[in-house]
Length: 286
Image 1 (cartoon, rainbow, N blue to C red):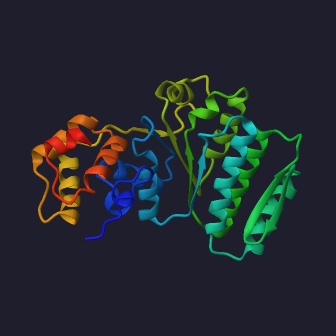
Image 2 (spheres, rainbow, N blue to C red):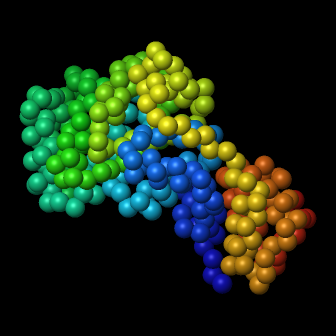
Image 3 (cartoon, rainbow, N blue to C red):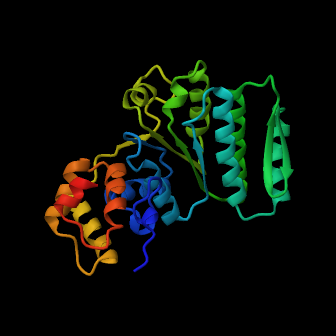
């Protein structure tokens, strides 16, 4: 059988048959999205946070956008990434661009915002005055999105990845305050945050002096269980070889990788390209 190994053992987001377990976390996150509860996922990098969020959003079939802050080095980059995620949500709403533009533009006109709303092809654009404050702009654009969603009677999810980046910025509290101002009153826009630096995330969400204090339900992602991985890798082995991989070989894979999702996928990517079913010695070699 012709297998695309980078799809069943991806180095990035896991989808379809590559996704392993996380049943309880999926249930909680899906419940939260349905009930409008903002959620924070905490786990080390490459633990599957993005895969989990995207899996649930896809299952719930809800409009969504992502703001990946990993490469955001200052307040303006954070603003740009959040605007990009908001734009993705707006584009996904099935309405004429002119209608969406009018609703959003009316909001900005009403508050005399320094953000200029325009349209380029099928994409809404938001141009900020060079002297405008990023925290104020973020407040305005998130508020405008909430207005649009209410007008269209739609609910949407904005996924803000690596949220701890904001906590390291000079004007962190201002941006955190802008996010909280919208989040605590929104009825149609739901926020899902993820963070990989536990101590920084704890300071942001569990310190009562910070704006995001107790804003979200928090989910700590643990390592996927050995039992779940046994079932997962056994099923995937059948796609490649005539039989399932021996349990002791899978146990050895999980022992070497310590069940870290990134290293499990990296090792299995190599093993699954062998013509013959690998044994323990092959696991050691790869």
